[in-house]
Length: 305
Image (cartoon, rainbow, N blue to C red; front, side):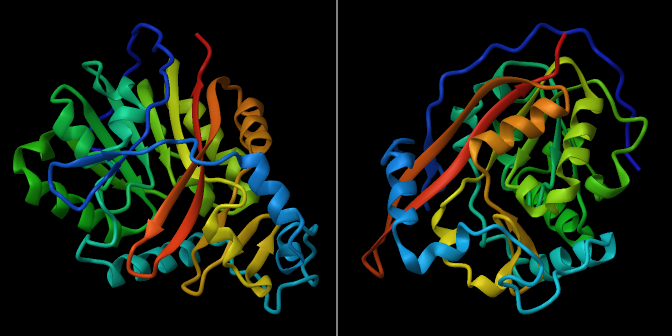
């Protein structure tokens, strides 16, 4: 249950922002800038389409075409169980770094007195830097994993106990059960690597819940895996459970978005597109000496006034 009911507030329309990307380093206070256009996505696509070893990623999906086993259940218990197991294995919080780059990519979060709903909060790697940077923001955060919520609260408490007064968590698998009916009027919803973990047939319903709880003029801030990201190309054909949709060994899912898919999903739910583009970042694994091409989709979508 949400700890405090939210009421509709009349606030000004958020301004669009110019994309500036950064990535957090291992240092506590350091940030290392990076370019979001290290390579051209269309050139990557052409390269992959010409590689026969990657052809299975491009084929239409049928239940018997590539998968050697039945796809995992889309039942809520299966989803929460997989993510509970995931967060138990990574309970120290070291698996994810704080996503400080979100403050530069979404400067709207720093503008003042706002209410934010974080969907799929995990271990609070997204909300913690926001709470620190904006002392006037209140964050409501949900996850389908009760273990994740425990870690999130512990993470925020360990960083600064006073932040807990502006951080409220609740257990919810919003793509299946919807969000609490008394939740509404929020200024922002963040979907940070969350939509890709939801079965594709439930994505539109999940985005519809975002639309319902936002105030008119409110904005969804979106970042997720992009088509032909390095992690997609590593999946074995047997792990396909849908078109551009895969299941990991631990039962969690991952979908890889193209811009057209994201545009249609949010458009069908009633949103206006403020910003939508690929972030193409080249990073290097220094220990292995390998270059990695990461692709993410960055977007902002507004509920009409």
